Length: 309
Length: 284
Image 1: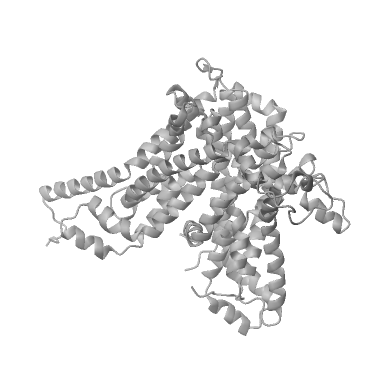
Image 2: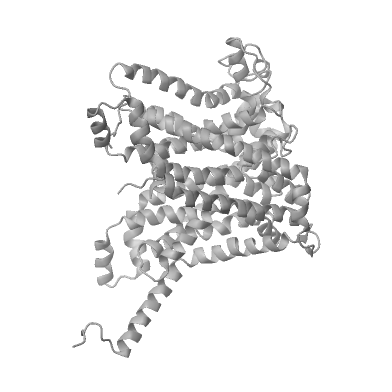
């Protein structure tokens, strides 16, 4: 005997299909603002910039197709190579530095001591300071002659470097400025730390584990999902890095192109030299790079990210 | 909330921890303090060796002077206008869209939501050029307040981060309330407006604050889209001022202070929202 529940008349099936369609229609109408935005401000510009990247387009007049010329010019352009190298070098420094510093700070303020809410607030505060203002403040602090940092260094008998005016010191300066705004990442790690059950640490204490052992055997493995999120964010952030080097160099990328980051050179091509086609080729390359990085991090994450049950 | 401490610094070592944290806090605080101190110095005191730690005399005139030469008041008004319209659009659209993702069941919903999340990795530099071209053809670049539309329209379409934040919050609201209302014949829009939105006030506050601080701090978009100095927002205005008055450090720092203070005041009142916003997006 067939199960009566399985047997449905054609009418019922049609009605269920109808109900499903109505549900989808309702869902889609609620998210329609996003759909409109997705088409107008994501899909269209993505495709258009792909098209522009194959053209010679100066904003005046219409784009003229030139095939892959923009892309082949890119790799022969020393400024492009420089901007890519600057970005990658900075990325390789800032990613590990920010992970280590943010996690270290989070571990410190996660201890049960009086006033730790104040410490957290003070460390977090700089990360809400607008980037333009922060860049200006640091330009003044890092001023080689009258800046606060070199004054402090001179007191302890060190001759401070010329910071932002020497190509060798611009990237360490940027590292310093970026680490000053590490507070929001610290909060991210702190939230992760507070999700670790306290029993784990108690059990480890009973087994006679040292503080360092607890950090390396419990804290770090259990914090890897946060590191994973942070890593993806940091890559995207580094490829987008624009405001601070723009302000410090007045939009030029000087000294000696050491502040010419990928996004800054892209901006210069588009809006200073009006090479829209060339800049679009850079934009698409950037898009592909970010995509590859994200996929690589995602794929490798299974090997090192521990998700608890 | 109780602190789940993993006490790495037991007993006597607490003092050491305090010492470390006080030093770190001072390092993080110093740039902000130095900005304010410099903004109150007379020019002769700005360039002295060793640097004087406190301004003497205190020169408040740097502030009105910076306001006068930089057109800062105008930038402030501009930014507030832009932020108000951006926030309104962000709130309306992110509520609607988040409701569609969090409270309605429909085929394909989760796949579309993954798409929403995926757009977060898209660098704005990739879409910037074609959008500039289109907005320019529409006559929206550098034409008074109309020139803000390139920044306003995307906000009125949601924005992945805010949709995500709002959806996470909406999902936590118990279904009993909305089910009861539905039985009473309430439409979905009615449920959203009468039940979900009043219960989601913390999320609305968080989105408002992030959107405000985001507009306040944004540099690249206004730099690209606003060509007329009369209509600069505060970020671009400050950069413009800095370009012209390179060595007037006391006035530059006064202007920077005026830009930073409102953000810090908001931060002081809404610290909880900032922290929640970060942890929601990081963990869920």
